[in-house]
Amino acid sequence: MTKLKEIHNSVLHLLFPHVCTGCGNDILSNQSVLCMRCIDSMPETNFEVHPNNPVEKTFWGRLPLEAATAQFYFTKESLMQHLMHQFKYKSNKELGLQMGRMMGEQLQKSGRFTIDALVPLPLYPFKEKKRGYNQATVLCEGMAESMNVPVLDKVITRPHHTETQTKKGRIERWKNIEGKFVLTNPESIRNKHILLVDDVVTTGATFEACGIELLKAENLRLSLASLCIASR
Ligand SMILES: [Zn+2]
Image 1 (cartoon, helix red, strand yellow):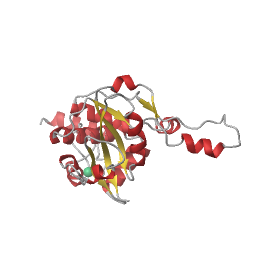
Image 2: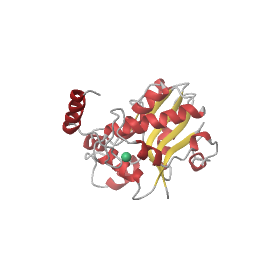
Image 3: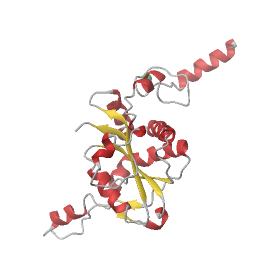
Image 4: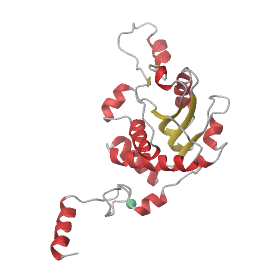
């Protein structure tokens, strides 16, 4: 490297420091928000290659699925917790895209997820507004780059209760609508194998409610993928 070029790069790095989101160390690649050491220490489950893995078992008798997986184990006070916090509460969208690409690559390699489209699990509109994005949609956008399939984010919605309800029976009505999903565009997923995506799976209740609604579409085949699996 010539002296001038060296100085140029140092000045650039000084003006625009590029550090790892995981550990704060300098990284040279502009293509990644994580250093190789952090990427290597992300706790992969490898569930995607195993039929009857713990995520699939979670949905036995609840939801008819082609395949299901979660990419990483989530534990408290770990690198994954730090990354999830950055992604969900610190507006680090680039990190979400990168984790989505990583997940998409693994699913593609497994050969068990031959899907036609990705569907992000919808967030309540007020939450999406507050956060600026739906984290599931960001993951899907990253996955789409690796899997070469479209993202369908207008298929299903998650309405929130409104203030127009009468005081009497308000809690009942709130309970009725809370946790419900509405399939708004069944035609767009008809005869397709779709992958429903969210950032975390715990009891599976949200995935189940959303999946049941999606399965109202004619001849739909459904698979699930979550970025993390949380210990119960
Ligand atoms: Zn790092």
